[in-house]
Length: 154
Image (tube, rainbow, N blue to C red):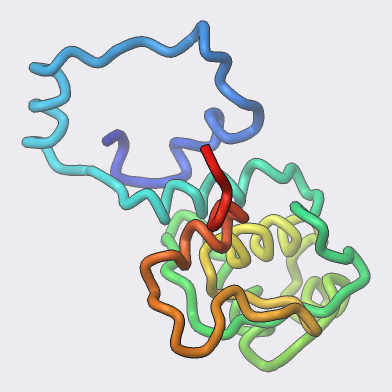
């Protein structure tokens, strides 16, 4: 629960929040937040965290010289108008970061941040990468699979 727009969450995404800074939320405050709406699905929070958390660097073990495309159109906010141009280019087919930047008019770091978010969100894929789920596998594990958490023991 928080602000209705995702852009306001940017300051929380650049660096991990130390455990010492965490504070419990009183039940009455949480009830008020729920009643006021404005909750975001975990998948959207992970998307915005990947968008701002990479600081222009490709996350994970993806090749910066690799080629990426959107497999499906992502849910985007009006707060990020350049993402429409980046997404339009990526829907055409696999392209390098430089090609996407040149065709969209966005900076390469913006393209990388959008790719990060789209990979975590499950909308993008890297050329030659294996699918996250085998054919016929239930969708319940998709988010955990994208985060690399499926199959890990706690």
